[in-house]
Image (cartoon, rainbow, N blue to C red; front, top):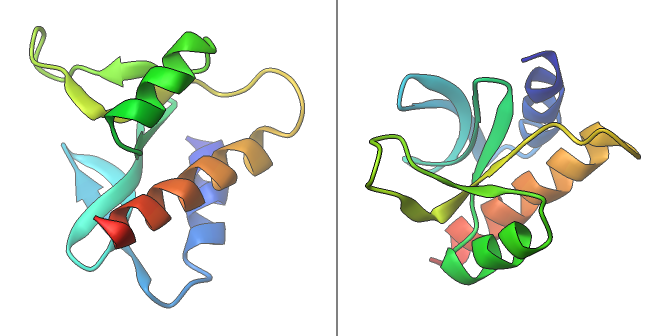
Length: 104
């Protein structure tokens, strides 16, 4: 969860972002809606179904399925990147989710 703590610190630099909880997991919210959180060491972000499919096809994420058999297709579960700059990659995805949430 240390990586997500760093992501959350970056997100909270925006005064519109507040701490939140989603399915009992710490996260970041815009208004009353969470757009990013940590789930068992992975980053969970709301990006919309089409973008989640893109990430799945690239092998970078999977659909969030908290209640086996009832996937939340707009949410991507992204494991910690093993190459490059993991913090930067997760912050970029979280910022993308924030924009998605703002436009929704």
